[in-house]
Each structure stands twice: as structure tokens, then as C-alpha cells.
Length: 176
Image 1: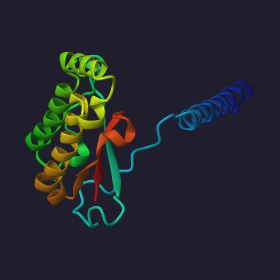
Image 2: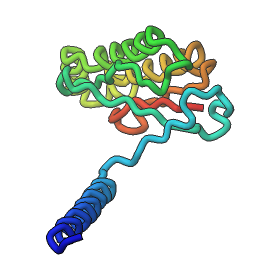
Image 3: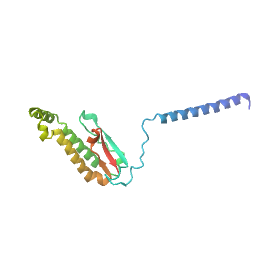
Image 4: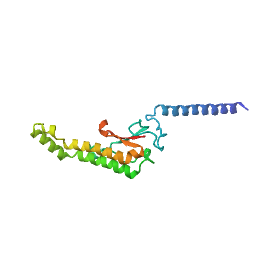
């Protein structure tokens, strides 16, 4: 081998090794700056193995709020892939739409004005004897969640939590 071919061969090997170390470094930096941890799907698609409300749930699925309606509390009715095999798409959408409908009724502005006027006229003593329109619908939401869980979600190994406990930020579904 002559001197020029040795130099070319050294250049190729050093260029390849520096390129591969650079690509390894860039791959490593992507993993270290990755903001979301990888999703662990080992529990999804498996049969129910825990007792609802007795054992701790295996996973917690969160449905985000839907802000298209403005300030009214609504949840996205997009079917999460984690629920496949446990509950049907139609059954899920009916449940979420029912929850969203109750929340929409609770935010009726005319009923809020009427409640405030009656409270003011009664010197704020009416609230001692009567629930506001909003409070009535929030308590009916809890009853509806119990019914939905009992009839549809609990037999499938799922449980919808009352979103009031987390300030209506998410609709959480426990996966047993």
C-alpha cells in the first residue's frame, strides 16, 4: 500500500468513527431531554385482575378537558386506545356525552343569575335551605357517575372517578 492510500484509509476510518460517535451522542441527548416518559402498555389489553374499589387500580387513564365550549367544563369524548377490549366505543361516548351534558346544564347562566338574585333578596339565607342550580347538577353528576359505573364500567373492570375531586381538570378512569 502506498502512502496516499494509507492516508485515505485512515481518513475514512476516522471519519466513520467520529460520525458514529456523533450520531450516538445525538441519540443519547434526545433520550436525556425527552420530556415524556415512554408509555408502559403492559396492563392494557389484559383481563381484569383486581377488585374494583377494594384493590388499587393498575393504571389511571385521564381524559383531557375540551376547551372548544369556552369556560364550560367539558371533556373530550375521543375513545382512548387503552380501553379497547374492555368497553365499546359507543358505550364510552354515550357516558362521556352524558357527563358533558350534565356539566353544560350546570353552567346555565340564566339560572345562575336567578340563584344570585334570590340569594340577594333573601339576604343570603336562602342558601341555607335550598341548593343552587349548579349544586343540584353537580350532585346529579355524582349519581349519574355511580349509575354509569355500576351498569357499564365496573363490569368491564373500569371505574370513572368524580372529576370534582380534582377540580374538573381531567376525567379519570381507573383501570383494574
